[in-house]
Image (cartoon, rainbow, N blue to C red; front, side, top):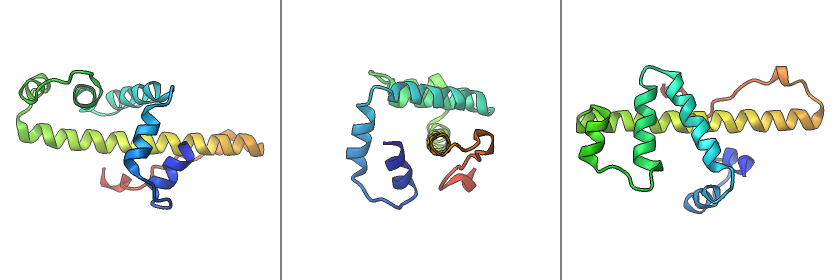
Amino acid sequence: MRHEYLLLMQGVKKVDQRKFVLAALSTSWIDEKIEMIINEIADLCDNGALYRTILVETYLKEKPLKREELYRACGLGRTAYFDRRKEALLLFGILTYKYAHRREQEDGMNDDGGNEAEIIDGIGPGAAII
């Protein structure tokens, strides 16, 4: 699934994105990976804790907050909230790609007997935006 994701993100492979996301969300390991990436976001930058709140409260709660409650919880107005949400989603996507790319390289190097210290993290499409 990780390899298919990387090909999809690189534009090499065309698949039904909705079907792919639903398949990924049904795996036993996805919650752990999402939490790992969101925790990385929280520790990464000045707005990290805010990005984490936005992602968790908007996408990961079974019963998300209503918009007005979310704006208040984040201490933001409507426009600022949507700007920060866009940044949070972009960062989540970049870090997800980076993690998947690194793991793919590690698995390939371990299979080939390569040196893990030589692994270079790739950051994929859109990284130049940040």
